Image 1 (cartoon, rainbow, N blue to C red):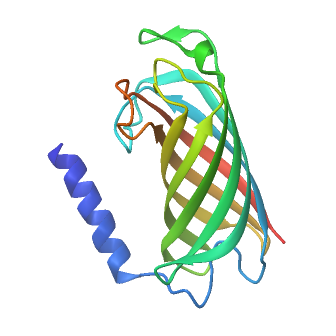
Image 2: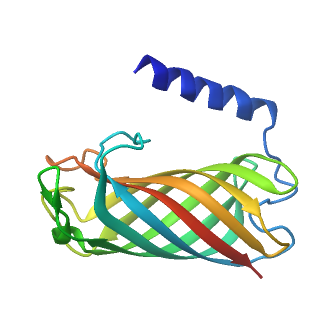
Length: 188
């Protein structure tokens, strides 16, 4: 646990030195719209930032449409997300095929630091999954995302991220869905 505190403190200190400014939105450049496709592979862990262990046969496919915004003067992107989780098999006592569920979400990703061709961001989301299950215990779910992006061209960006979904303690069952993922975004 002490190691996790040190990592979080180091991230906060490094972002404080290069705080993003709202005059330029690094998610979009000169554009006003963005579409993205994200793929995530599941991790069986309850931490908001899960350690890269206990990988499970559970995937996430996400289509995202975004527009630029600001969050307390920091550049951000407001997004509509359509998500499909796909599970198969059993591992760590969970039947992952039970969690093949569509999800709809609204999210806001906030740029914490950026350079000419890269950015570091954190995001929050709220949404609904089509059906309740014993892992989450609620249709209402909340999301947290931490990621980094790199501009491949003026319009195209590749992102790597960690994504966490849970019911935010709104139900007795409080396990989560967690993913390590990659995304490809196109701004226009």
